[in-house]
Length: 479
Image 1 (cartoon, rainbow, N blue to C red):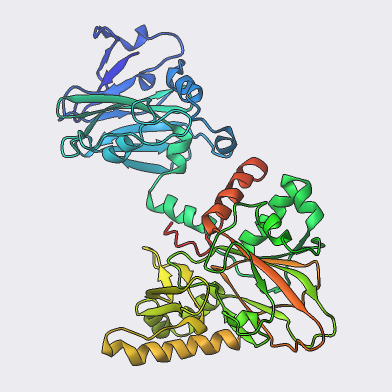
Image 2: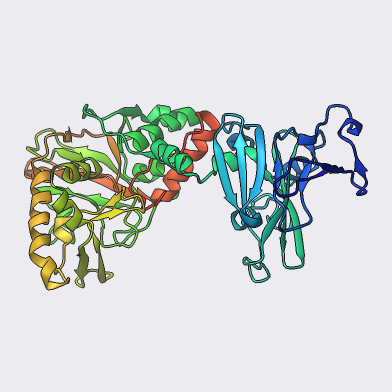
């Protein structure tokens, strides 16, 4: 290994070999240049740079990362490894500036790089869990004292905080993928942004296809991610099938209604859905801190003589975006003033008293919509500052009217064997009233947690698709 030392205000003047002996550039081994040398310094007042960053030939760190099970081929095959044109340590050793071959510039803080070091001391083998000990890390003293490119895929960094020196590798493709420059952040967010479709037809897949192969399953999950809704046809007309289908994605999510629930008209129902009345568009179980993610409703029986009972769906995120465009004052009120959602029901086998307060619309640090909560039947008493009461109700009424008069609504009359799946965090669902005097309408439902769905989809994106990140889908994820 060679070390190139660049003192403040000068180009590289001194090249030392591993023993510390000065050598001349023409004494470097064939295939190497000054730019391939280790870029470092022994003084905090020195500025370190390399006009180019040719990689060294040996790859011990990469070999170690692979041997420790931290090189995920399904992920890495989708990440391009850009070569580095220039490495510069700036700001008194607290920043590492990378100029990549495509002229993109990344700047990584010493603390960020130290936290993400890939060495065995800092990351557990096979799972990659971070074990950096912040108790002993002096962030005020932490400085980058060297950086070098190893092979074509690894950047090695050396840090010092006080008298402690640490050296470790980071994968170049991983670094580029996790660049937090303003442009990189903008590009990343554009890839996960929700797309809205004028065409309100519901995509469909067959039950046989989703159980036959991962590709069939992937097609189904892709529809759910992109549209928020998908119909599965020709599911066996048996109770319990909704659970089997949902578990193709992930374990089902238990709620106050159990692991599965039967949507059928019953005497003295514990929920309006268990009666033949009309159900306005809503999201299920907003009284939870984390409402159910995917919802599945399997039509076990639907007598064709029954009048009514058709299902309706609407993309609440699309409506929220229209609200922001048309009436920003109402949008701002609903994203600021918290509403109360509650379910208080003691006359049931397991009494419940669920209550949560939060705004209907949640924004991230970029003021982008990341979640919308809506269920008029579960709105409790408003408990806010007196100046917010009237503005809230004006905004609430406006959104209520928008939702119920929305022209772009998905509509379907299910038949036995249909299973409608949809993102409960994105797609509201409702139902027309119906007469139950001429037969039975029986749907069975269940849920899958939203993060489990995103995980399953991302795995399939990486294994079978192009590796793109899963679409943001109302999961309260601030990215």
